Every structure is written in structure tokens, then in C-alpha cells.
Amino acid sequence: MSRETSMTAPQRDLPQEPSGGAAAPAADGDLIMAQVDKAYWLLEGEVHLYAMLAGKKPYPTPVRCVQFASMAQLAAALPEEGGVGALWSINPAIADRLRRDNELIISNAPDHN
Image 1: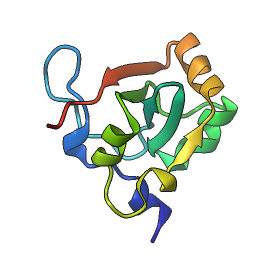
Image 2: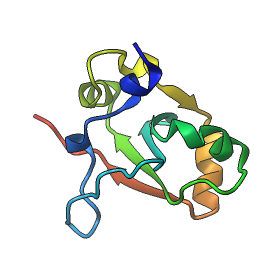
Image 3: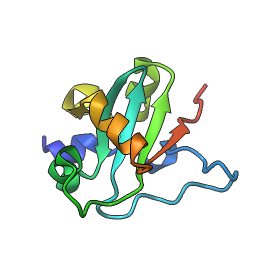
């Protein structure tokens, strides 16, 4: 199983933009993170992971962060192979830096009942 395959979240699970329009599909190289409580994982953009972690520009901005209400909700949004365990974990201090530098857009994951 490749790491890239297991990290790709289905596009249907990306949230709506705050304006109410559909979120644009992730372009190649976009950085998308998932958040549950104070924990973060990389969903898309592994090619830019080192630059984002080190704060070495250029890397795609803004970074999108999808907030999930629970680990179960995050796991349900991921492909079955790999799941959350296959994702890169992101130190919360990195998310704090991105937020402080106005490089982070946060949105809520859609509810799937």
C-alpha cells in the first residue's frame, strides 16, 4: 500500500466554503490538514510537507484545515485502506504558526448521518 494512496481523502468529504458554495477540489500540491481536538494530520500535499513544517517558502497557501468532531468522523471520511494510522501527524505548533501567519483556512467537516 502506498502512503499517497492511503492519505487521499475522498473529495466528496471536503467541506463547503463559508460562502455556501461547493469547496473547490484540491489542486495538485494543495496542503490540506485534518483536525480533531488539538491533533492534526496531513490529508493532501505530502510533496510540500517538509517546507510547511520548516516554514521554508514557497509552499501552497493558504493551507486548508478541516475540523472533525471526532476520530470516528475523521475515520469515516478516509478510504478504508490505511485509515488515520497511515496519515502524517502534524505538531500543533505548526498549525499555530500557520494560523498566526494567516496561512490557515479552517472549515468544519460535513456531517454524514
